Image (tube, rainbow, N blue to C red):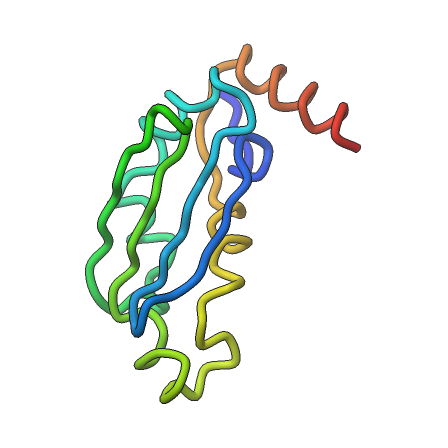
Length: 120
């Protein structure tokens, strides 16, 4: 089973509310959404952001948008106005999320490669 970075299946946006980072992961194609649901779990995201997210992780499914939304609690060093972190608003966490590797079928890997090639 091929393993690819999430960036070949989705794009992402991130931001903040106080000390909680918000990361949205949106499938590039409708057939990629079930892969996101299966592979991008709370446990996987918690492990991926170990050392950054010091609180819990919540996941919300948005099937009508082909998206997942994650809240990473206690991830911003207190939030924008008090944090000493370089990225106190969590803007780069979307890029970090897209570096996560996921297992996909050969068919999904081929479709992801075709999607990436057409975007270039």
